[in-house]
Length: 368
View 1 (cartoon, rainbow, N blue to C red):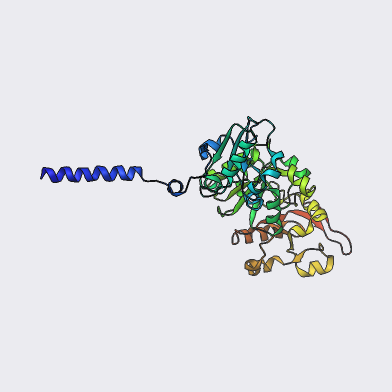
View 2 (cartoon, rainbow, N blue to C red; view 1 turned 180 degrees about the horizontal axis):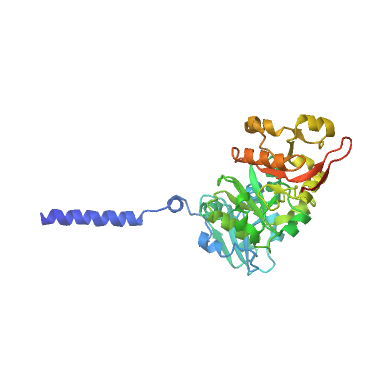
C-alpha cells in the first residue's frame, strides 16, 4: 500500500515538473521548436523593446524593421525605421553615425531570419551594441501594443474608403489650420468628454495621430482607447507634418463638431464645401418642393426627412454623411433617426440657417 502511494506521488511530482517545464505560450512553443542556427548572439524580448519604443524617440537607440517595405508600411514597432535586409547595403546611410548607438533589429517572428542577417551586417560595419528582437512584429501586436502605420498606408486606406475612424489628437486650433482628410478632432485634453465620437464597434480600426514624433498626444489617446476596450488601434505617429510633406496641406474635411455630438460647425461646413465637397455625402432633407423652388448645393442628394426612415438601410457607408436643411431642425431629426439604427455610419448634421436662392450659392449662417 505504502509502495503504491509513493509510486503515485512520484508520478504526480514528475508530471508537475514536466508541466512546469512545458512552454506556456504559443510564442514560447515556437521559440523552442525553431532552428536557432544563424541567430545573432544578443536576443531581447518585447518587454525590453518597449522601453525604447517611446515618444519622443530616444536618441541612444534605433529600432530597425528588416522586413520589406510593403510589410513595414502596414504596421511596425513604434519609432522603427525600415531598412529591408535585401537592401541593407544600399541603405546604410539610414544607420546612425555613432557606431556605439544601440541597434535593435526585428522582422516577422522567430522563423524570420532577416533581422539576424541585418544584425551581422551591422556588426561587420563596426557597430558595437547590437540586439535582435527575435519575437518580432507578431509578438509586438499580440501583446497589445498599437502598431504604427506609414503615411503611404494611411493614404491607401483613405483612398479605398476603408472603414475606420481617424482621430486628430491635437488641439482644435491646430486642427482648423489643416488636418488629414476624413479625420475627426478629439483633442487629448477633451478626450474623456468626447468619447461619444468614437465608433460603437470596438473592433473597428481606430487610428490616432498628432503633430509628429515629438508629440505625445496620439500615444496617450491610443492608450486610453485600448483601456476602453478598443481592439484595433493604430498610430500614424509621423502625424500631420509628414502628411503635409507627402501630400500637401489638407483641410479638415469639414468634420469639426460643435457643442453637440455630430453637429458640424458652420466654419467647418463652409470649408468642406469650398475645399472637399466630394469627401462626404451631403443629404438635403427638405421637401422636394422646397428644393425645386430654391435649389440646393451642387453635390447634394435630396432625401426628405419623411422618407429617411425608409432609406436607412440603403445609406452608403463609404464616406461620412452630412444632413442639412434650412434651419437645422430636420437635419438634426434625420441624424438622430439614422444614428439609432446604423451605428456603422459616420454621421453629422448642420444646425444653421441656410438661405437657398436659385442660381446663387446658398448662404449658411447661425440658426436663431
